[in-house]
Image (cartoon, rainbow, N blue to C red; front, side, top):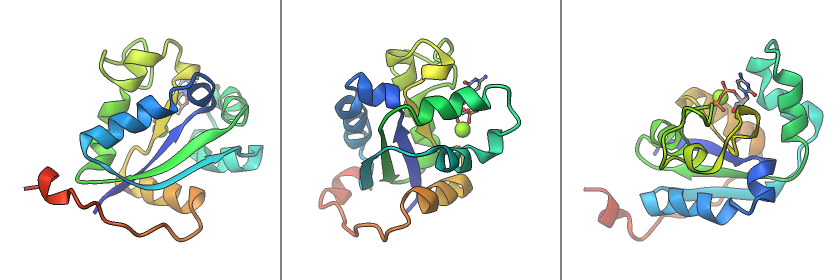
Length: 148
Ligand code: YYY
Ligand code: MG
């Protein structure tokens, strides 16, 4: 089944939003397939955001991501990449709809609480980068109550 990489950024951890955010993905019906609290260094953060290295906000973004621990996760389910992005909301919290994570919990684009992969292809790359260890293999026993 499809997987995505979700990361609660340092502001989300500092602000005590970890449980709230995990709860939203859990209650939706997605399956947690990887989870760790981790502080990353500059070269790792630059790898994660390599596609944005030419952007004017890149340096600030890297400083922010390495400023404290983040919660790195793998979530699994049907269309989880696209639906995960909807749960997260628009990049700029000023434009994120209420009910989304950024719409409910963020103000500024440079403190937007959470990352989610933008395609199945980048999800694969990001999962490989953040979870080089082999993932825990488990299946939810409620699967038939969520999927028809
Ligand atoms: O995928 P998403 O996080 O929604 O946005 P990206 O375009 O990939 O940018 C990554 C990250 O960079 C964004 O979450 C905030 C930050 N950023 C910024 O600080 N200023 C911008 N104008 C655009 C993005
Ligand atoms: Mg992105």
